[in-house]
Figure (cartoon, rainbow, N blue to C red):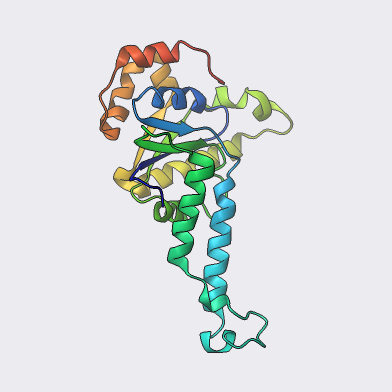
Amino acid sequence: MPQRDLDYLFMVTYGRSGSTLLMGVLNTIPGYLIRGENRDALHHLYRFHSTMLAESSRVPRRRVRQPTHPFYGIAGFPPERSIRQIRRLASDTVLRPDEDTRVTGFKEIRWYRPDLEEYVAWLQQVFPGARFLVNTRNHEDVLKSKWWAEGDDKSEHLADVERRILALADSLGDAAYRVHYDDYVADPGVLRGMFEWLGEPFDEASVRETMAVRHSV
């Protein structure tokens, strides 16, 4: 586990949604270190953990203790130790909090896998008390941006991804908060609610200064 207690915040969104700008705003808060995307790397660790958990319970423990069994030893998989070590691995290699970090996490745009709900529940195990910031944007603008505009029409895919992440937000209750890019770009003051949810003072001047710097949108 990390050497000290940390709070965790993960941004749930899709590509070209203004999430890099929002990441910049979050990182203006003293003690916050929100990393960028990691191409959903932690999902591989989720699949490792869930596979080992399933296989360790699939075969009777008595049989897999025998060295002649093809799954010899798998019944000894320690799920709690796995969670602790994954937390340490992710903290040491992905999050890499600084000495003064209070809240860490990352933003990611790849929340479209069919096991989304199970994966997020696992993240809550790995990162106790984790909260999830769900960011959306006007679809017409998203669909005109970079890869969304290439090839076949992707409007249905985008709508499905947004439907799922909004449903996820609803299911998480107070552990999730929703923001909309078009709203906070038009009026940065609307982010006051997000800051209240985070339990942080809202410095509108600092937010406006950050938003005046071009990010990847």
